[in-house]
Length: 256
Image (cartoon, rainbow, N blue to C red; front, side, top):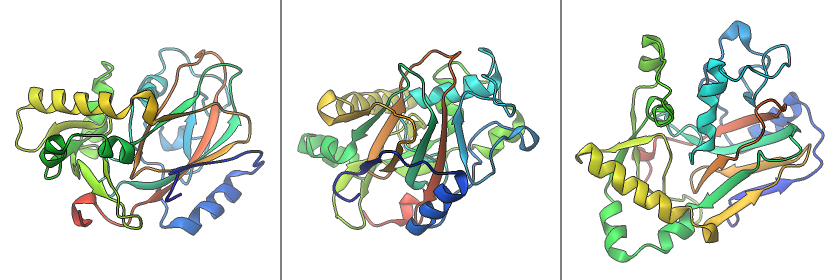
């Protein structure tokens, strides 16, 4: 994990309990609080993030379903739970049902992207703090139908733009579609700067694209990667189950 940051384990025919038990070896676990699914509409437990296009009866969600539209933002580059004050460390995603075409997942190495920046840009990035919120990432796609409770739940949190890995000591960018502002910067300037960084960081030379096979288990380090899902036919079932290991502390409390 320290070297590659994303690992693929093929042919892992496991259930949710086994996936969760394996995940607990790597740190404290998150619960699935980052979606719009009401408790009585959930088909999975709160230990499992439902990365699918299915309702609680296993049927494909309607094209205009609110939960589906919210989830489309997974096709933007993001780091899991960067909208939480203590974000995600590892994510483990199990491919239970995968479409015949499309639906791949791309991972971009933020360590390599950092190393490839010129020194002036690196120095500019080092002290910067960004505000992250799901309200912002969904707004990029024109989704703004949030209740007051949801807006309160996903109030912006501050994250470092640059992080140091606690084991390898390597620096990396911390980029996510949830990042909408830079503290102390005018919003248009901040967003343009973040877009430039993301364009640099997601060049093909920094990206691994995973083509899903049923029962793949893919595990990655959110501290040094950003990732996104790719398009697939919305009327074809896609069912992936994610367990998420929480980081040790907010990024502002971790040494840079």
